[in-house]
Length: 206
Image 1: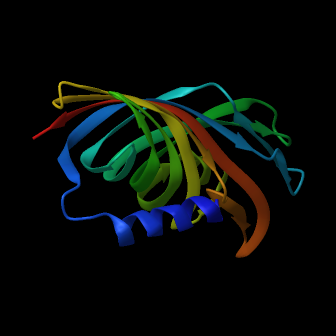
Image 2: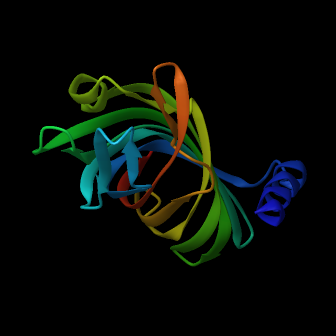
């Protein structure tokens, strides 16, 4: 990942003024899967993350700088995602399914190579949490602690059609935790929660 960041910085420093620059908007959907630790809280609740994929949405702006056969593509996107937790009540019995929803600001920066209209690239993505809602606290009284910012990576391929339409397919993985713990009576218990997603998007160049 350090090599990718270094390559991005070198591209920014040495791209000449006659490079081709495209900009536009993009939107799409994602298939999001969360992975989290199973956790037992004071022998009262057992919490398990349901690993079924959920659909998310994203939209925002993109900039593409082309230099010979290389390209640099930073983006600014607002995205949504969700997951479900299974809460097993160990004292009274019964299981409840609660939903968690997230709204985020994503900053992917993709660098790669062009093969005609085809693009192949990878790069880092930074994410800032804008909003969240969780049924965990409502159901158990315990609160999951989410990180305000996370860091991950994206890798994938894209296709530019007539310098007007951009199609992209990517995989995103996390390098840092989404949730770091569950707060019980003011005390944080470690809880590793991460997500991964396949992203499909359509963009329009102006």
